[in-house]
Amino acid sequence: MSSTRTLFLVSSCLALTLISLTLVLKKWHLGLREEGGGDDGPDADLKLDLTSEKLIQQLRERQQELLPFYLNSTGDQTGNETLNEEVLGSEQGIGCSDLSGMTVVDLLGSGYTKTVLKVLTQQGSAVALKSVNEQGSDMRTCLEDFRDPQGCQELVSFKLRKEVILLQRLKHPNIVEVRAGKNEKSTLVSESVSLILLFIGLCLSKMNINVNVLIWGEKFKSVCLGLVRLLQYLSRSPLGSVALLDFQPRQFITVSGELKLTDLDDAVVREPSCRIDSDCLLQFPLRNFTLPCSSSGVCEGLNQLRNLYNAYRYFFIYLLPHQAPALLKPLVEEIMNTTGELKKNVEETLEDFEKVLHEYKSGLHLQNLQPSIHIYYAVVRGVKTAGDMDYRCWPSYEQQACVLSVHNALEAAHICSSHPQCTSFSLSRQRTWTG
Image (cartoon, rainbow, N blue to C red; front, top):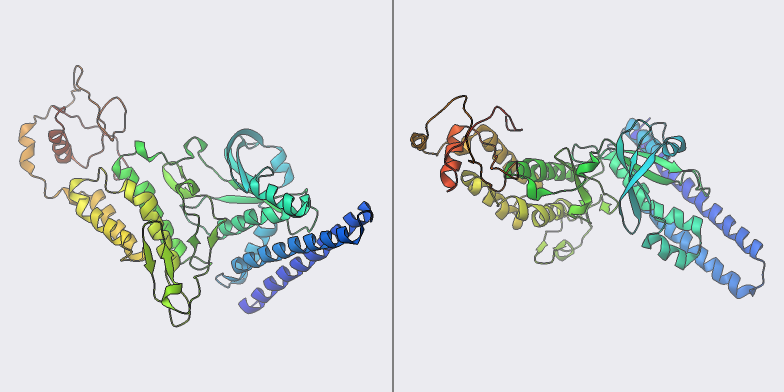
């Protein structure tokens, strides 16, 4: 099947779904009016018709928002068919029987649209379950405007449906894995279901970014480097260039020390259109940037630069400069300058990060240390420090002692000589991610 025919079929399916949704909603509202009788007269009927038309219009608009996620793809038959199955609920998704076998353990959080619960599966695994927040402000506002519980369930669930599509279409180590399911209470249209996200294999005890307890190397690799690799992927994803409009630390978690993006319902996959350069404006609280409008009438690269600057102001500023190894600081400062001024794109920024990673892992940043520092220490093998020799330092792997990772004995001697409390140090066989 050709890619053109596949896209046509997908578009046709969406159109049929939208028509069906419109017809069923109209029929449902007519049924409501018949049940309620005509006691309130023609004015009440007219008001009900106008209200239902507004709701139907909003549902149409949400359908249009989802359309680019179907069409912006690699164009292969398998990819589109798989996407369609995943959105509508495939055999690999979550059925009602799976949900009924889960045990709710805790409420992890709730927002305007969604609720996240900690649940235990039948196999005993702890996972995060995300669903529509029936008590959220989005649902309350919809009910106040339309007084239509079923229609509002459909409307509010569109954000969750969008998130399912994106999280299942975008595959990257720094994006959470999900499975989609449906809430079969929805009776309007079988394809228009309330979808549920199940984050697979999350270590729920670490579902936050508590970076204050991390040493610099962990902050650099697990948070900042992982984030830049994610942004590079989003800049050239199968759906196009993805911008995270609601870019906040709360959209991320750490799983076994690795950064994971969990929230994509406010993402967009199209670069803004433009006529003049001023249309390509990036506005932030303290800085504004303007990109050139391309000859094709698109703000090319704006999405990735939006993501990059948000990474700078929410993560890099707080994590990169502080406690960086002295001999790596010039490279780190260069990254801070280029990202803070948006002088480089994501691809170039990732190259700078990979350079820092290489120097940090290989120990190249230690080449300028004076070997003569060794003369101040005597090597005693197989002997531990005696007495109350421990002292606290920060950052440290332990709270009650100064436990750091070093590349070799020379770096350990350099650190010890820079700490007034340090009179000796011991090296263990324990290894970190640097080897």
